[in-house]
Length: 309
Image 1 (cartoon, rainbow, N blue to C red):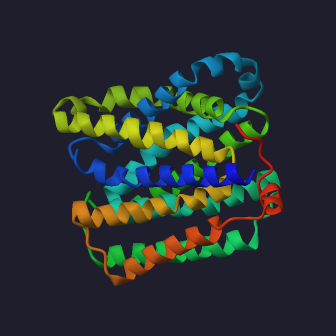
Image 2 (cartoon, one colour):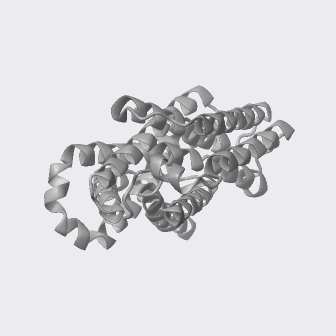
């Protein structure tokens, strides 16, 4: 159980790192709309997940039908998430869009678990989440003060609103996928079916908006990278971790994503992050240390209670 927990944490950390590259990658295709970026990334990546899990999905069709409500809610959330997330980054900037979307997810995930699962959160999780939220607030304030304009950044309030919608949908599909796993479904099947169906819902958006991907090799390369690395590999690892770590903790661990996004935005894209922002980065890293330090076997069993997938 301890090994499975640690492996789950490592897998989610890997997912957070590659997800943190998406905002910077999107800046290399400025002529491609946020809707097209999101539809290509999550749509193609999601359908690829479904393809590699196709045999398991076929064998589990009866169980999937029994859990169709969770599956449909998760698929709709998967389809809505990238549209809100990439639009948020385009309107508010890479750092703010990522911080708001990913930063709101742990609190919204905890609220979903509290309301629907009647699950109490540990004091350590609450402390870690608070430290992380303070850190993200510092990053956001510092980024606003620097008046950076990397991917637009000219409509911050609307970008923040879309970021909150992205955080809610992220928390929602994490919860539905985990509920399916807790009911005995393998992680590959739960994630493959959820993301495959969500990917299908995004195909009309990709057809309608994806023309600019064909305008240049650079645009096409951005689309392929987004679909294969952050979305395909990233979500395979996230699904593995989600089978071993509660969704509220999993979304909290992914607070590393805005740190990666902020650092890359500074180094590659040219955003300026004042000292307050780097203090925020340090707090987010501290948050990860607080919530992921090893548990005892008894604490892990109490905290997780999840079968290996």
